[in-house]
Image 1 (cartoon, rainbow, N blue to C red):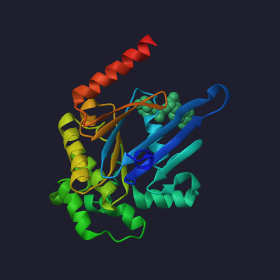
Image 2 (tube, protein in one colour; image 1 turned 135 degrees about the horizontal axis):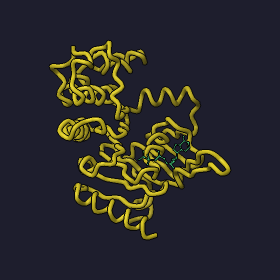
Image 3 (spheres, rainbow, N blue to C red; image 1 turned 45 degrees about the vertical axis):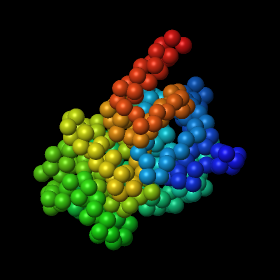
Image 4 (cartoon, rainbow, N blue to C red; image 1 turned 90 degrees about the vertical axis):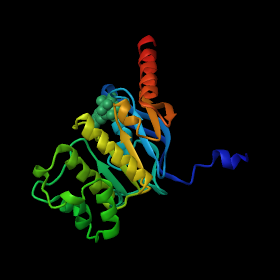
Length: 256
Ligand SMILES: Nc1ncnc2c1ncn2[C@@H]1O[C@H](COP(=O)(O)OP(=O)(O)OP(=O)(O)O)[C@@H](O)[C@H]1O
């Protein structure tokens, strides 16, 4: 294969970090949370980020989503270099190109499910694309709950609203931070199934931070972080393979 074909970055990356370094604090409190991370998140793929507590998972997600400034290196969404943007441009980029799903559902209690789903677009002055929002709502199984307020919905249904809200603007990439952390395993499995389905049938791109090997097994690929570095990855992971790999890291940390 010619050199360029091997080494050129894939044109299909939805987001990409190169030499991404994030340092918090200085002097005695200095922490290198990310240490020259190179990683790509393929378009139309579902990637899980795993690693021990403090390994840099949330920091990586926040830096890639433009929520946290990076210390050095590069972070791109599509072809847009985040470090070249000012605060207002970053806010616009997050609003237009990024969807977020957090552990806490963060829904507004006085609004209906439908109003919550379309709120970010209403704030941005954009008219929801009806056919797309209909597909999203059907994909996450909310068609018959759109008039309900959050208090009238189960935790799993509330998180489905949050997933639909993240998908509604058809973002370039969705970042999910422990999206099933507040749910029982059945509701959690449903949410993961909907995220998987949004990648498969709606061609969305999802990057998810998780501690749970079963959650990670819904992804196409798992990236493992250790001490602020990418230490390994798995493709088409099974929960058992993820668990095995986690045990190997723990063993290595203990014996090193
Ligand atoms: N705002 C901050 N100020 C100082 N240090 C921070 C800050 N945020 C994170 N860190 C440090 O950076 C490192 C990576 O933290 P991060 O939250 O990214 O890890 P994580 O893998 O997401 O952990 P967890 O699984 O516990 O959520 C840790 O050592 C953490 O203490």
